[in-house]
Length: 159
Image (cartoon, rainbow, N blue to C red; front, side, top):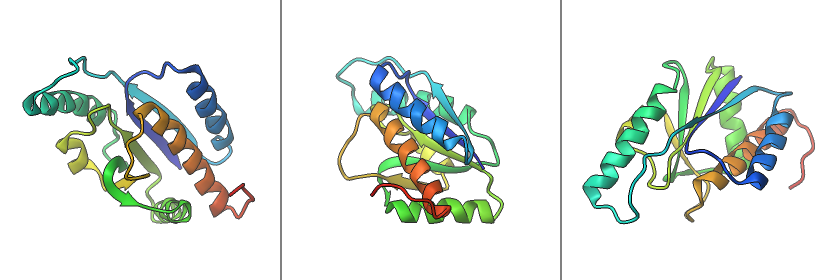
């Protein structure tokens, strides 16, 4: 399985990079995983609704340019479907079984995802009703994808 994580913004925090690198190394035994960063749109702190839509639209164009036409797209969104780790594992297993070897997870910027990205997505996934920094979501996502592969292989993993 080829997994891409398309995300807005550069990761600057060293501790997050170290955690993500560790899980990417572990994941390499199960799948090819690529993290693709697109630049975030510079914007002032206070934005009108129209300006927010414009910023998300520009970031969305960059995201969509990095997604393979044949990829199954899972967008991370607070309003998405909440799943257990076992549900995520089952979903990835079914995608692989039914010929969806390319999966793209999408993490938006601080304002979220554009409507165009959400329309392109095959499904939306929420990790919580809480809001998390998008940089931290990268670490949480790669850990959960790693956990999913361990679950699907029947391999032990801490709970």
